[in-house]
Image 1 (cartoon, helix red, strand yellow):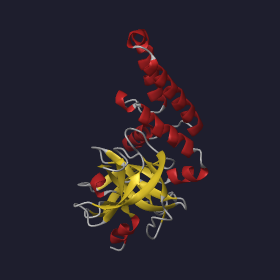
Image 2 (cartoon, rainbow, N blue to C red; image 1 turned 135 degrees about the horizontal axis):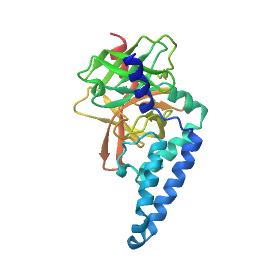
Image 3 (cartoon, helix red, strand yellow; image 1 turned 180 degrees about the vertical axis):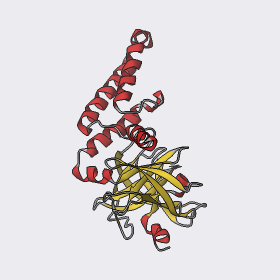
Length: 271
């Protein structure tokens, strides 16, 4: 019984019920308010400050992110949420989101995604590092315990197997390899900051190397934030071509996302 109660609490905490269309409307309204406030002289803003803060709190409650810090509500952050709301209306993106999960270790959270109906989930090694079991939360199917069954620090990937699922779980298809020309435009879906199930898009802009990894990594001109680790990078055909693992600052492109090419997953699946 205690476990059932815990599941209900965590599920409510992880996923919000608001519809994409309603989310978009709320975000557009809040964005307009923030921009209007930015144009008002400081002396005029003071009497309205309490109402502005109260509005932000109500907005946060609607998104089930009560703990979010005020600095998250910058114009860029609202922009990426608006983009997510627009994308989430798309039927394909809605389907992709069903397979993207929250990975909770107790000390933090990251993202993962199912790759078969039995609940085999891909995430980053650094998301589950030091753990044997984690909590895996699907948007529609709920919360499960997951056992870490494979991990490879050299390519920062790991596999988690869901335990006790009596239903077929949603999953994403995997590309055989990445193709820069064919797969230049991509979708990302993950759990950045204190949000969950956020969809965004961007472009694959090339490959680079990182001294800590035994593989080249994809550079993505796309919004990637803390919590996106383990997010699938999905091409226009609906196939996963990479796994987000970090961000960096590039001299030419500024802040970019980094992803592990999907072919590196063969190292774990072949074991």
